[in-house]
Length: 162
Image (cartoon, rainbow, N blue to C red; front, side):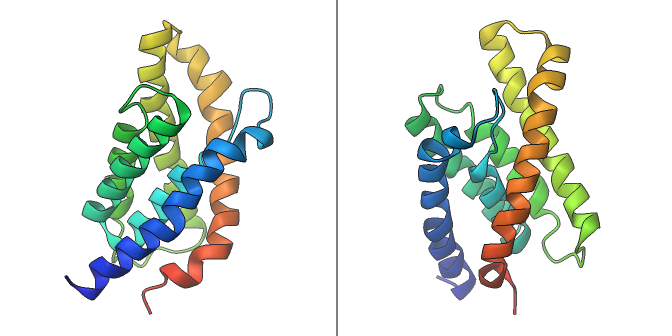
């Protein structure tokens, strides 16, 4: 096994499992009305940017399945959107995009995740897509982006390629 793959697995366990536990136990305490950040998505995006599309989609799928199992969501409800967004974010691996421009891409990826997730949820709950987008997805995007910026401050030294 290559050193890069070993480092990916170590970081996936080091950051992924605590993110899932935090999502299930701590994030509900940080909820504002019905809005809450997706800490697991933040870890998937950061791992994807560092390791690439295949690792990003893999981490998104497995962390999404674990998140579904712990939160009581139907299996696959979080796994597919996280795998898809992990793949998209992983396409930026090797690109020298930093700072505000990368943050704008992360906002787009989080929005794509939220749209896919709430479309699946809307099919199950029979909700209007416009109402979901305005009342749930956009506030969740803002909250998740703030969480991503804070998490990145703590994990960036482990995710640097140097």
